[in-house]
Amino acid sequence: MRWLRSMCVVAASVVLGSTLVSAEDTGSDLARGQEWWAVVQALANDSMRGRLTGSDDYLRAAAYVVDRFKSYGLEPAGLNGGFYQPVKFDVQRVLADKSSMSLVVDGMVEPLSLGMDVVLGARSAQVDQVDAPLVFIGYGLHLPEAKYDDFDSAAVPWKSLKGKIVVYINGGPSDLPGPLKSYARTAPFAKALRDAGAVGAISIPTPKSMDFGWQRVASGASQPGMRLAATSDAAAVAAKHPALADDHASMFSATFNPAEAEKLFAGTGHTFAEILALADAQKPLPRFALGKSVRATVVGEHSQVESPNIVAKLEGSDPKLSKEYVVVSAHLDHLGVGAPIHGKTIYNGAMDDASGVASVLETAKAFSQAKTRPKRSILFVIFTAEEKGLLGSRYFAGHPTVPESSIKADLNLDMFMPLFALKKLHVQGLEQSTLAEDAKKVGEAHHIVIAPDPEPDRNSFIRTDQYSFVQAGVPALAFKFGWEAGSPEYKAWRGWLAERYHSTADDLSQPVDLVAAAQFNSFYADLARTVADNPATPHYFETSFFRRFETKR
Figure 1: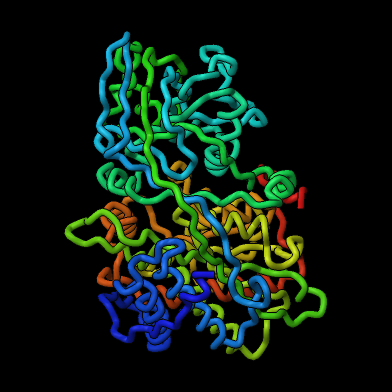
Figure 2 (figure 1 turned 135 degrees about the vertical axis):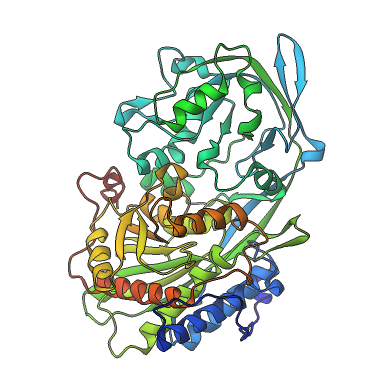
């Protein structure tokens, strides 16, 4: 295999980048923070060229991770006695300069600017051509079990969507829980489109929910999209875990620039400004035909690539509990080399997510040096293709390299962001399972406030690898440094999203609080041990919507 032939060990850089030091610095915390930062430097330096899934650069980064695991004495837990779990992907790159999209109103054709007005989707299989009417279905949420369904309303009944392209806006009504709204954006949305006979979908992000401006969205459209290649057991995986089912059929998809969205609503009796105000207030939205069609030609390049997840384990100490696993995870891939921003083309991904991988490695090192092992076994998993839609973790969740029923919890890291002193953590999935009890207990011991995600409509719940485990019925948490609205910490967080997220500025020159990073790593390792030592098996609360996935395991 090419990725095996390409493996080599990369030496860690020892030159510290631009960093911050907390006022409450201690020598040991600073030293441990510097060790963590050295790993970030090794993975996010320019020579790694952004670690694009399946690239030689990703494979060199993977070799570095494996070398670290070996040095800690961890056992391989991938396939065929090794550390790797290879994953195959179908790759699609949409060629905007050869594609086109127009609105058709009363026979008049209004060309749209690809990039300025709209970007064509690349993750799911695109159609070559489409010519179909548009219908606005509000938030586009299909949740009949919660007695809410934008796909079937009095104004736009289910049967009327056949042959149409649905248009929807991000968000949802205030009386639906944030994780539930996010869940509806994934497998239920794709299935509802198919079942209703729709031929495509156009999403409109709200400016309030966007992490960065439209220009960055448009520049990312040149990135190759990926989806998991079909496997021989795909039907069996889908039957057991419907939420992990892969959809390989073609369907038109696009994202419309909210600054240009009035073009879609002109002549309907509604304005996008009106719709946006309702969405920002989380109020119910009208549904109605838009009185126009989309005519599009999509030209793409197609290929396949293979890229590995990395899996290592530390055997537990308890004769019985050691047969169970707590997963400690992060993703290694980033965006590679892309459209230039301020003259730079390498998307280093220092905080997204070299930082998380470094923390997983530091946790592995801490466990390997400890006098006692945790009671449950710890499975250290580094995922590929997170940036392509959580694909590496989704594959692992459906094809685990240990017995599926033995995986009891996942503690995932993605952009945990040590930009300022650690006082609070926002924890995705906190309201869903008994893992909340362990997180709050360890947080109290570390003098850290543990709180739920305060911005659920950003859909972070479904944008980190922990969600793949949620879909497979495994209790899971993901972590971000917390803030109070309007505080300097909040401004630092929002500033990072606007300036550095998925940008060439997510590099080694950015300021990072090394002491806070070390303190977080201590919390994270203690939490993993606490979950591993707890004789009670983690489980979803009876009130959690996601408990239904747990009962199918």
